[in-house]
Length: 132
Image (tube, rainbow, N blue to C red):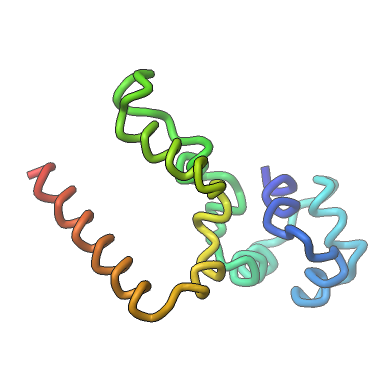
């Protein structure tokens, strides 16, 4: 799983760029992407920081966070809330990884970001009330 995540997170960057940022050789980084060896914990921490993610995410322990892998909890009905959200995101060409790429959100104006934060907070509060 790590090798696949590294390739995906690297995106359009070269192995050389990522290796340089991590302080290792390109060949060593290539071994991680090709699943020949596994990094030690210190390097995993550096990788997670570099890719702005968590070690769990790098190792694939949070696969259900990604939109393309959400398992509908309301059955397979196309009208379920989860499927509605996935359809909306697909309609606007928002894929799983780009949705969670916070750097891409920097294009939002400050007032748009505040509005988004306020709305997320509202939704979280509503979800908590639904559980209680």
